[in-house]
Length: 470
Image 1 (cartoon, rainbow, N blue to C red):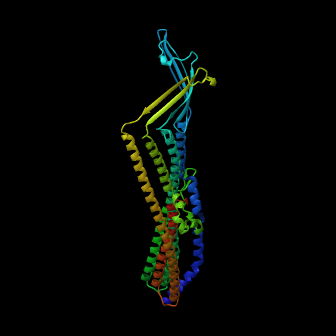
Image 2 (cartoon, rainbow, N blue to C red):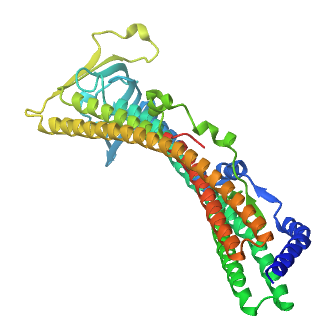
Image 3 (cartoon, helix red, strand yellow):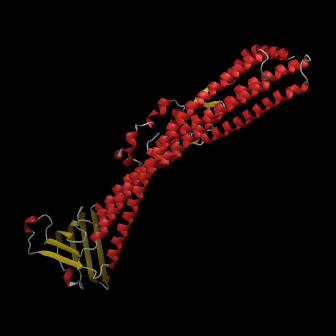
């Protein structure tokens, strides 16, 4: 009876092998979405990438706004009062100012004032009075002032928004990579279960034939049926996980601002080592300060420190006394430069100094505290990034070793199954042992698949931790 079962088993195996291979090939989807294509769609069309790029526009707009503080300015003041046919006053004052980098401002002025009750200090010649002069801050506001500080901070803000853009895109690319690798893992698991269902079905059919000819009792098919059902259940669960993983990956695929859903006949493609080989940099590069300083997080903190230092310099400048000087040459003809004489002038001095400077000293102390906090944050972040890079590299090395061990385990399990089948063919084994060996092989291949995905995820994490675009 046992040899009869063996005969039917191998007859079904041989007769069904060719048909099964054809059907398996027909059922395999031919459309693949490679990792490079997946990331290409992401970079070109994803809304978050476009949103991240807007950060650069934000920084540039802020810089343009701050440069407006140095724009030349024209102002016109006109006042007139007339009551009961009497013109009390008619006052016109126009000014053109050119601010400069330091606390110096050039200006030209024209005023023409008339009226019965005009203030005597506003009296000018009949054709008006022209003046050209300069005003500047001697102490406070000379080497640093609000206008200068705003422009400097805006330039550093551009660097900060660039770093934040890079960090935002890196995070998106990392999350997309994890979604794609999860899709690969689920699809590979589906293939593993599908490949072993055929063997379980062959054995069940062979046992049924033996039952039909009376060599086995009907109860003998129960174990084979349970094995087949167990693998069908595993396949169904793997197919569900594949679909869910594909939908998660679809979240990162957009074309022309329209989200795209991956169809069931689209499959992922395992990226080769060449695609991700740039992530396996030499160990000495992890300690390279230049490489570490280029990290988006550290660049953002450096830009923040630069902004705080500008603010500190401005607060320190506020401790100085305020001394503003102004001098204007006066003339009745705007184009007659020879008649601009030092004896005709309008000048002024403005001086002020708070006695205790408590507000200014408090502002400076707060600025220094913010700088110290940011410096501590940057130091901590740099050490954290360095340690993460080292830990990930250790993980990659360990996974390489585990992959090698698992690969040998899979080959050894296959050898055991082949040997068990040869023993079964001569009546020295049983279907129970063959199924048991295959169960161990399935577990080993699933573990191998899991380690392969962890290896890819670790490479992507290394890219992300180093702040390098995938």
